[in-house]
Image (spheres, rainbow, N blue to C red):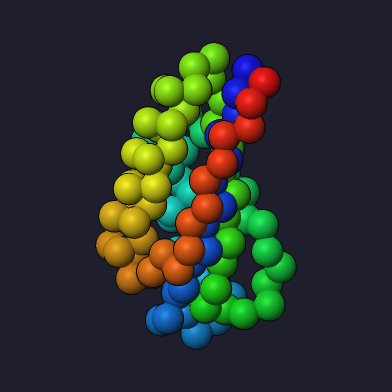
Amino acid sequence: MPIAKLIIELDIPHAQSLKDRRQVVRSLKDKLRHSFNLSVAELDEVGAWNRATLGIVTISSSTSYLTSQIQQIDHAIHRISATLSAEVIDSYAEILPE
């Protein structure tokens, strides 16, 4: 079964503390989990309060479905992060074959 992964780097300019950063990341993760059947994890260490890296993984029997879903997830992340006053700096998607 193919697996799709998406790495997202976020800039959170208004974060003045670890609490501010966690609030944005937790909200984004919860909204993604609610909208899509996926797994989300924070990948980086807490080195900077205004940066975060998220790893997103989903699996399906269809590569074409995964391609479509990753595009929808990426679009949703841009939309949700804008409402949370965060900015997507970079995103990298990859579909790993069987």
